Image (cartoon, rainbow, N blue to C red; front, side, top):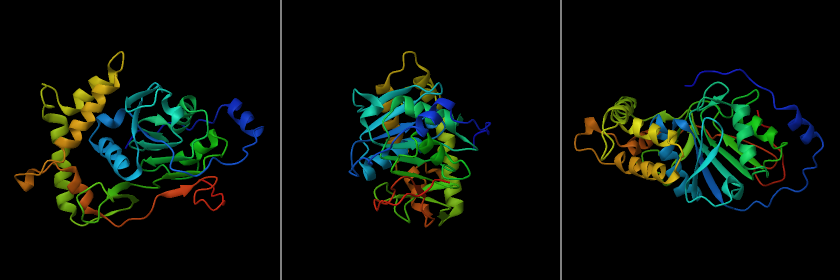
Length: 282
């Protein structure tokens, strides 16, 4: 959980622009191009990497971007030359906290997103715990920055997890809040093994841990996306290896299999269901 940061209001200029803006018709509800944004906590554990792979498999996400702590959004993999502006449907993977995601205040994130994509997205999907928790949730802050015009926003109210309901696979897994664990002790063991490997084992071919290799990549100047894309691909393969000794498993897919049931994410926006009915964000 990240440290809480003071709430900050949207800039006055943004409010004035929204007050005088006619939203007009919503963008057509089609699949469109889709992209994933990861943040600096891609280096905390394998979660963001698996969120990206999940979004590729289940939601046709084709590109990855990194939002740096300073707010710039850098292309990582398969990015359109136009940048985030080319993607009307945006997924975000980060750890959530009290008014923060990956340590960044909600309004700062919303402003950074708007700078990179001024046109109103059709969808913003947050694989972020607490994103839908009101009042003044992340969903609301982002939608407000686009003058309430985003058709659909989704995010977790409380703790959230990919749930496989017994299936150790990303295909068909769903993001849910308050998921149960079919085997809590095994879940805790695998999670402990994963963090140990992440922080202590050397990344293949290097004398640095996975965590430190990742930090080195995102702090590189100038930043280069291809090495981070390669890193994320390697993480996916290394943390899906079947365990020879079940007690030493670092297979992230096993965690997904143990997660079960739960409740859907919060859904809101100008037309989240496609029936022309607005749902206020909390």
